[in-house]
Length: 156
Image (cartoon, rainbow, N blue to C red; front, side):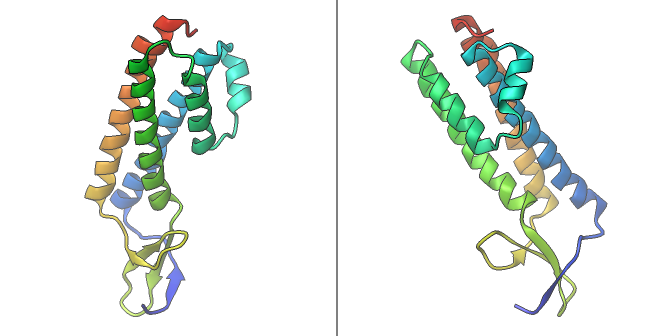
């Protein structure tokens, strides 16, 4: 691959799609904070202080630990599945939001590289929109799980 220089694409729809991925992931991580609040029986402000600046990994780890308090195998299995989806989508988000982006000097195309991978094509708007759809679905499933599974078992 030719030399790559730092560059941000002048492509407002693509940049908007990247931003939407970041915002939706914020919604999903917020829901994990609500799981922690409810499963630990913490007041809202205490839960916010307790989880301030936690990574997605740390939030997920705490939810899994607290989720052992759920009274049924089915609810614990569903929580494990939700946390698996969270891990997968957090990885995809990370690969798109924290990737190095630049412009190939040879042809002027924007390319991206992960923490350890080589430069390659940047994701298309359609691919980013697909990730947004998955994040929205996970967020909605987390809301439903909190409302109908965690809160009835003693969450606050």
